[in-house]
Image 1: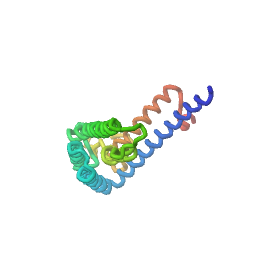
Image 2: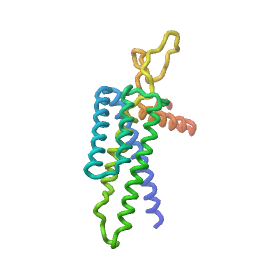
Image 3: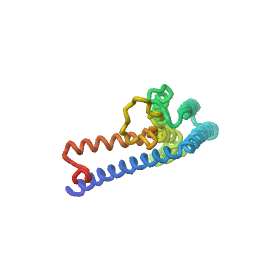
Image 4: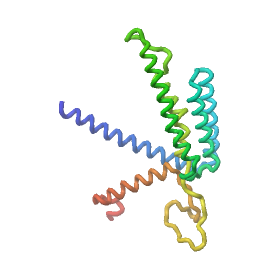
Length: 220
């Protein structure tokens, strides 16, 4: 077969592009939603952080999850909670924000190492190839834990937090023509996810302009 593998590769590329566009559209919509309902988003994220901390504590007490990784996870969410003091604004150079970024990666590595070593240990003590270890979590359980207890809060903060300052222009300053300015001259906060999507769109637009592609309104 010669044509079918090419069709498979082409379908994979097209599917990846559609998935990327869907994720970018979702991030953009969620960022817009948070900008319109900041108070509600802050309450939701605060309750979410406390709920995940309680969930991790229950997993340690009931399901006997390891103490040190659990303590690291609870401490990390306590640090995430510190980012809520100025919600939705954040300085990218803030030590608390930088510590949160580092803790996300550390948590992922620690829990990935824990689950992988637990599976390896269980398979090494199998008496037969056809045995199925019953004391190890399934893939869906591990993925759910990573999604809820490791990545959910950092992802929500990434979508919700804004890297801009909500300030009024001072006397003598030049008027800005940026689309982030509203009618009253007050700068509208823009979420980091929304800013990232806009930056990627700008890079794609500049690349298309260099290749001679034009927008439909520019062709008139």
